[in-house]
Image 1 (tube, rainbow, N blue to C red):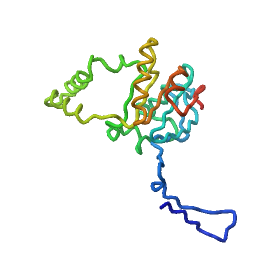
Image 2: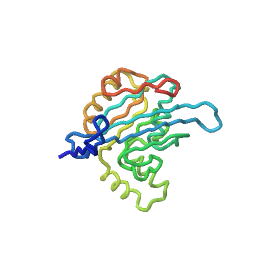
Image 3: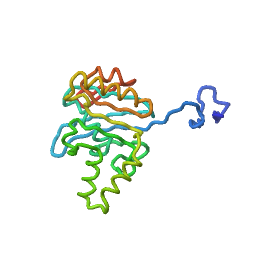
Image 4: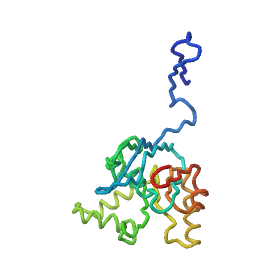
Length: 211
């Protein structure tokens, strides 16, 4: 039973409570926490992100909306640990996302232009070729082992997923995401409000680096 303990019954207006949130049915913890995040690229004076604060709970579906240059992709790269904030703190699934080893298998990320990141026609080939480049012994066997233990991620992040898609392909993508979103926390950065309104229950609007 949830514990609500009033520390001093003599105080009429000021009360202090201890709440054991884990005992509250349906309570969902924050799995993404940004506090006072600022970011500027090296050798530049302008901040791309300015004092961004954000809490995302488990199984929430969040859309990041804004025009080109508003800081959407920069924010996404901070969330997955590719960039370090100039100021402020970031926590994803309880850890600093720069510690990517602890997040392996927990975060799925689709970049704005996948062809710049993925070079192979299949997932197996992509993992196998990476294993060979890293000179891992028995790369084919290791690739099979990795794919066997890889399941659905806890957090799925998509950066402009509808870029280069025609209407039919975009509708197919939305249907796929509608099926899997109930099991994951979903973050979508897009200029397309139609995707965000259909898939997300929370919206973050960025304008020149601020929300």
